[in-house]
Length: 332
Ligand code: ADP
Ligand code: MG
Image (spheres, rainbow, N blue to C red):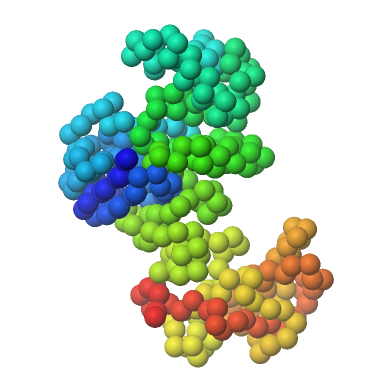
């Protein structure tokens, strides 16, 4: 059990308000991801929950207990950062055992916990190596293992994959998905600015914008029902197409949003010029410019693409249009 409840949380640095009226209800065992652009307050919110940072006003509860004044070490939380910060002079085994050793846990218990964490993270072959003898992905797994042996109720991750190259990120992302399945009781909060990580790992995503919660929902809810232009732009790759002017007005909106997969090429009332083509194998993204100028993206699957410079006709599925008002909020 480890529900996390945040009520009217504010965080100021001097006179600057970095977090503004944050309200969250995270269920025990849930995997929640904070996403948002750099500087929007993701790390600060995580640090307020962990106790590494004080809360200016509002309430943080874990399992119904107010945590505002409980020190970080007594919150039952483990945190994994972007930089792994392993002890370089200790082996993988010693790194993972260290926190239990400090607590003077019995040797047999330490060995059992380390063995279990190593199994979960597939680190068994590396237990006697030193950090310098490991790849970046392996080091990050050791950092996660070091947190697991403490048997935390709550696991906090702050951009744990952002120092890894693309292939390792995917592999380590899969490890984290497996870890989540292996620890169904442990509540996890994970910060990233990568929306693919958010979409693939989260039970629920919290989109932060300039210190406020813009929207909280499942990946499907955020993708299919973005409540604002901000979320519409942030979730989905390539970005949702945003169209204003007469086309939007005809549907009673200031701006409409159409996903690249809801656009069709070759026929229809609209005309544009192909500016760029990205061939990715299974998908081809065709970038076109229409009048008045919008840069639009159309996703084709397995169809022959037009050529750059060609003028083409296109259409979109109006049933799939997301409608937004002049204030950037979703219209009913
Ligand atoms: P994110 O993790 O989303 O990139 P942060 O939570 O690190 O964002 O930062 C949010 C805002 O708070 C930024 O504008 C940052 O400059 C500011 N900030 C973070 N830490 C401090 C600090 N210790 N003192 C003053 N301002 C800070
Ligand atoms: Mg950060």
